[in-house]
Amino acid sequence: MGLLADAGPMWCLYFFRVPRREAPSQKGVIVSAADGRVVSVQEVVPPEEFGLGEKPRTRISVFLNIFDVHINYIPVSGEIMHVYYQQGHFFHAAKDKASEHNEKNALVIKLPFGDNVTVGVVQIAGLVARRIRCDVRRGDFVSTGQYYGLIRFGSRTEIYLPEGVQASVAIGDKVHAAKTILADLALQNAECLT
Image (cartoon, rainbow, N blue to C red; front, top):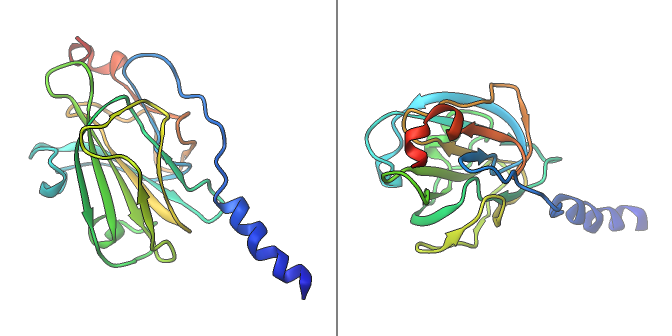
């Protein structure tokens, strides 16, 4: 019985681990905000309340299972222009309906170059994960790979790339927060880097 009692705290320590991550240093890369597996790469019009405009963007959805690191990292350097929180349901986070209906917290990051180039990052609570923590606010300047929050116990994270930028990952790919490059603006969209 004592062994079982020790397992709970040990599991929590494992689950909420914060590994040291070294983000890529090249200008214009967008990295994953979470560890997990890519479950969707789609061209979608972002929800109006996110403040990302009305044009379609590539949305990359990453599902975090209970064994993945649940700490979230900033995907690209810039200024937090908008923060949006929505209470919601708790559908299984691997399903697309979680993106629309579940509890979520969204950030819009304006990149420090180009004409209003923005990236969206969304924390989505899952079936078991019912607590989202976000430690950045509107007006904060953030750096690629910086810790910014967590989602507890199984969840989903989504990245909305800038308009016209394509993903360099595919459905089924395993990604690592602050390390895996999701898109490289220098290779695809050089005019927004000026």
